[in-house]
Length: 128
Image (tube, rainbow, N blue to C red; front, side):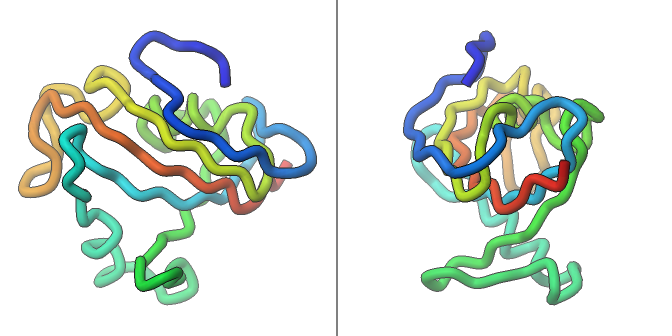
């Protein structure tokens, strides 16, 4: 993973195939945690409003299939940067500083303002 200020790699398992790069469409799953370890129930909230085909449950955990094009700012900056260079089936756990996440706004009732996040990311597909 390319080093960027505010993004720290905590764990990684390499996948297979071509590495994702800017301009590639990718499908991925995430789990968010506050820096102190509490899970952010973002997926649980999204399960209530998203189509069932976007949701899968693994080991009792709801995962949402997100699809974006890297470089188009369709996800928070920390997620996009972490996805760069990942291969299908790969996993990364990263710490994301507030300036690459939700800054001083946060997400009401989920993520406080200026929160550092720990995010688990799985690359499901590279649609390049």
